[in-house]
Amino acid sequence: MLKRSTIGVRRKASGSRCAHAAVSSIRGIFGCLVWLLALATPGNGATQYTSVLTHWAANAGWGSTWSVVDTATDAISCTLTINDPNGQPFSLATSAGTGSSLAFTVAQGGTAQIQAGGAAGTLVSGWSEVTCSDAFLADITYVYMPGGFPVTAVSVLPSGQFNLYTFAANAYTGIAIYLPGSSGVTVTAIDASGKMVGSGSLSIPAGGETAANLDQIITNIPSDFEGSVQVDCANSCALVALDVLPGSNGSFALANVPVVAYNNQPSSFSGTYIFLSGSLSGQSGTFTITGISPAGAFGGQAEFLATATSGSNSTAMGLNEFNNGVMLLHFFSGSSFPLSGGEAVLTQTSSGFSGSLYLQGTSTGSVGTISLTFNTM
Image (tube, rainbow, N blue to C red; front, top):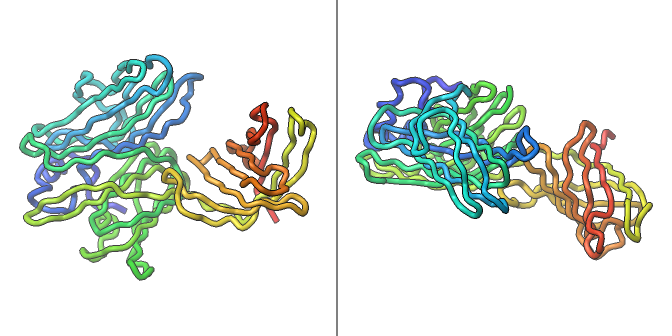
């Protein structure tokens, strides 16, 4: 449980503290950081896409710039919605106007930037989202400029929503978490030898966000800690981390932290398939996926390797789960396994995952459907 505000900032009293963070203390610096979590997923409308931005901060030396790139085939209409840490609308002065809901357009192939903050004023912060009429990319750049001149800056890349996260850390590493729903969050620090140093919990309102340095979440962690952090959300959450690198005379620098996000996988899956068209039309069968184990990361999400078996035929395969509801499967080619060389993008259902299969070497593209259910044995 956080015992003081470090989240840029829930209470005005923290504003002056953050304004002088660079010269007074490394502690609390992260509470003034600017975060973006670009979770590009379809919104409620048929042609709407939304990116959730985990944390922003403005004024008292801190600035943030939202960047939106049009990746569609035409111009897009967008809205930047600004909220406080509790998820309530917050009116913010920006280069696109003042308000909690700011409309803007992006030309085909173009980029729009919205800037907020500066050297003066009282620090304010919260979380936001960008919604556009068609596909886009978004990120945010944070800059600290206490005298009006940039001292340190960093851009934050998109991430998704998962239950578990792991990343390298020091005692001052910053962690920002957006919580779509109700969930408990536990943060555990592990030293270089694999020994648990300590753990702490975060209290985050549903639909809200929070941010803190590691040493403010785990108050007994040594100042010279070097190791890793594991974050466990009881339900899905979105997380981004930054290194805060202390220097002399209260100076600091910021750096991105590679974060691997994942969900625990069952020991095995069972599945069924049926081809709907092409030369294999009507062929159906069952298969199992076993030996599931993490093997590196793909786009920030853990990649799992496994073995798929149908009857007496087996093949190696890769499995990636994205954003708690989309799964990518790739069945390696070069075997007699009936789905060998196939790729499937599946969406989560009440019983597992289902979606279309693309089998390489066919002229019809998607030639079947494939479904997965958790093995209850």
